[in-house]
Length: 216
Image (cartoon, rainbow, N blue to C red; front, side, top):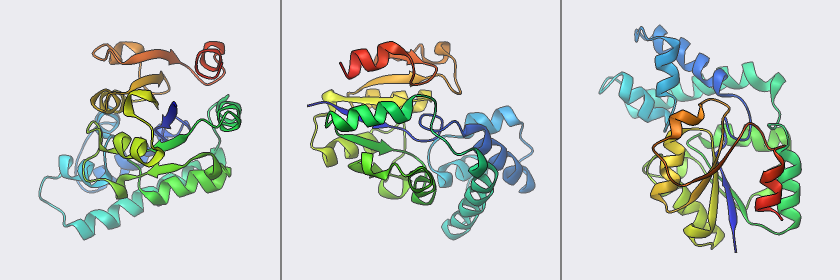
């Protein structure tokens, strides 16, 4: 049995610019004085981890929680009018669902943001496992997220194909013993040169080889 594991932001919805802009504003209001490019480079892992990288030891967990929700509320408000799946993904999910291929979401987003997408787009029924930042100890590139997906789906890691948009996510898939399909929504092919577990690159889910190779 094979399974499809999806990252969320940048992989299922094209929203990473909105996350970066929200973090850029909040971090600089706190005195970080960082560029938009630096904010982009820091947009991986849990919100708490990001804050700790920029402001080591400065905030309590409660303060990080508060800033995390503040950031997500800003992001959701800005992105809500543009909330939609990346082209072709709706049809791909439907085909996989009818073929009874187990599917999961493994994201560094908090549950609050995952619910925003799944319920806003009415796609929760496609997924038998949802692992968020709230469900793991270590975030990507640690393999915990994707290994937990595989365990919940009862599918061997070697039979899981991960859909990702970020190098750290592909690294997490590699560390879990999984192959990956990369969507180039935020990063170029060249930025993934270090990884040998990639079976293909796509600009969106309308690429003919994707359904032909993975769905038959």
